[in-house]
Image 1 (cartoon, helix red, strand yellow):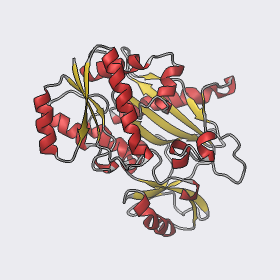
Image 2 (image 1 turned 90 degrees about the vertical axis):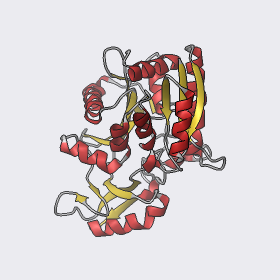
Image 3 (image 1 turned 180 degrees about the horizontal axis):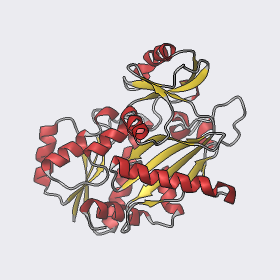
Image 4 (image 1 turned 120 degrees about the vertical axis):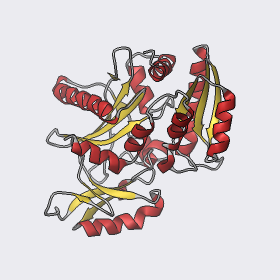
Amino acid sequence: MKVLILHSEIDPCAAADEQDVLVQVEAVTGALRSLGHDAQPLPFSLDLAGLADRLKRASCDLVFNLVETAGGQGRLIHLAPSLLDFLGIPYTGARTEATFLSSNKLAAKRLLRARRLRTPDWVSLTESAVRDPFPAGSRFIVKSVWEHASVGLEEDSVVTARSPEALRDEIRGRLANLGGAAFAERYVEGREFNLSVLAGRRGPEVLPPAEIDFVGYGDDRLRIVGYRAKWDDRAFEYHHTPRRFDFGPEDGALLRSLRRTALRCWDLFGLRGYARVDYRVDGDGTAWVLEVNSNPCLSPDSGFAAATLRAGLRFEEVVGRIIDDALGTA
C-alpha cells in the first residue's frame, strides 16, 4: 500500500516542540516500511491548491496525518483533514470536526461541560464559566486556546485573581506568547494523569494509565508540566517529571473512573485511531479533564509511546492498528 505521511512544514529555526514532528515522521516511516508499505513524507503547506494537486498526482492509498500546525499556527490544524476530506483520500486519526473541537480548548471545555464531564471553570475574553460570586483570591492558569505541547506554559502562568476582569487583564498581557488567543482555567492542585486510547478490533482500548511524578518538588514549586518539562533538557523540570505506571490497590477506583471517562471522551468527540486524555485529580479525589488530545505525539519518547510499550505493544503494531482503524479494517 502506498502511504503518504503528511506532516507540518518545519522551518529549520523552529522551536523544539515543532521540530519534534520530524522525529515522528522518521518513526512512522520506519514502522510503515517494516509493515511492507511504500511510505513517503510530504510537508503540509498553506498553498492548498498546490498541495491538493500533489496529493492527487501521488495516487496514494492512505495519508498518515501528522500535521500539528499549518503556517506555524496550531489554530489551522484542521485544514489538513479538511483538505483530505475534500479530496476523498482516506487518512489516519481524527476527522475534521473532531480535530477542530479537541484542538480548540475552549470549544472542548464547553462540550465536556454540556455532557456533564468535569472540567475546571474558566474565564476567556468573552465569557466567564465560573460560579457566581467569583471566588476572589483563587488561582487560575493562563493557557493558549490553540497551541499545544505546553507552549507558553510555565509556573508563572498561574495567577491569583480577584475578579474576571483582573483575569482578562492577565490574558491580554500574555496573548503574544500564547498564539494570539488565550483563556484562564481554574488551577487544580493535585495529581496529574494521562490516559492514552488506541483503536482495536473490539473498539477503543484504554492503555495503562500514567501519572506524572513531580520528583523533588518542594512547597515552593508548583506541580506543572510546562514547556521546560517537555522540551528543555537543561531544565530541572525536564529531569524531575517522569511518568509512572505502577499503582497500589488504593488507586483502583480512581483509575477505573479515569478509564471510563477517557472512553466517554473518545465517543463524545468522535475520535479515531489514537488519543490521549489529560486529567488533574484534586485532594478530594475528584478528577477534572484538562484536555482531550486527538492525534497525540507519536515520538518514541512521548507519553503515548510509553503507554503502548507498557501495554506490550511494538510500535509497528500501534501504527498498524491506527491504519486499520482509518481504513475500517480493524
